[in-house]
Length: 390
Image 1 (cartoon, helix red, strand yellow):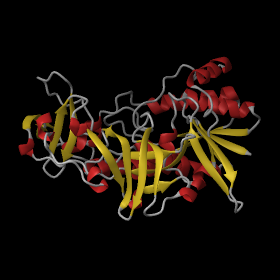
Image 2: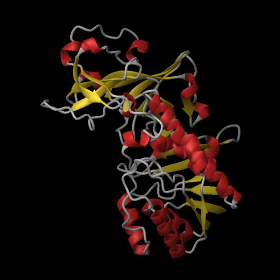
Image 3: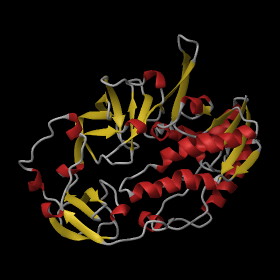
Image 4: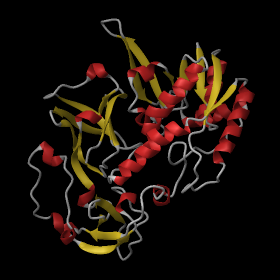
């Protein structure tokens, strides 16, 4: 079996490549450059060149062929343009999830296959296995990584059975400190390289500056909503109401400041508001794109930050395990997370004609439209995901 390792220049993919080579596989490395524009980035202009240089050194050290591919056109179309579109609507996308679905396990996979690969391996901290069902069909499963501090299964929540059939995760059952130890023992040039941060293949960015490439700045009011607003408010009477966010109006609070554009901010955000005079931090609880208003509340336990349920539209429901897809009227208990590294939360999934409702045992803080909700079985298998509607 011929394996293509997506070699990024980081320690995780380097150790994944090293382990595959040690196990006797026919391995080659493929480095991917997806982004050229440095507008809004917070690091050096040629960071990708350093990554490529380290990746090439790692490939030479291990003794595997090295190739280069530039799918930046597809990346801009499938990931970055999608980001701009979502932010323009007042939603907060997760580009890393889209990058894995559209680039690493699609465009990159196709390039790897053209070079003779049977499967693609990455340095993700997650696990994969499979079984054969009663009809003789092989069913692939994706499970949380063994390192609870580095589990990256969430980022793969949109993969399909076809994509999983060509995927390998060599370090999924290893903890990060052990990965570093292996890298040092093997003398890999990436052994001490810091983990990458920020947007997949773009890096850390000043988000407003980055988004201003396409979304023009437009000043508007920041309206503070006080806790008294919630006293005596009628409670949601049904599941549909529970999944709807509160709609505020300027008269519900007072103007506390100004912002540079509602599309640049996200639910739960506390930085970049520049609003003083409060004993506790200020958090964004809602945004109104039509009127260009941001609503904020004081304190991390502000009632406006919490909701008991969310909704996923039918077109946005994705089952990694299609054999387990729910029917209308069906209800199941699963474990759910709505952001990377969030501890799994107990919830009920209820399938209705108008979409999938997720009702949490405990109200959740910062449910954010555009992000992905992923659901897991008790054994750590990730079964599906969906885009949070509102």
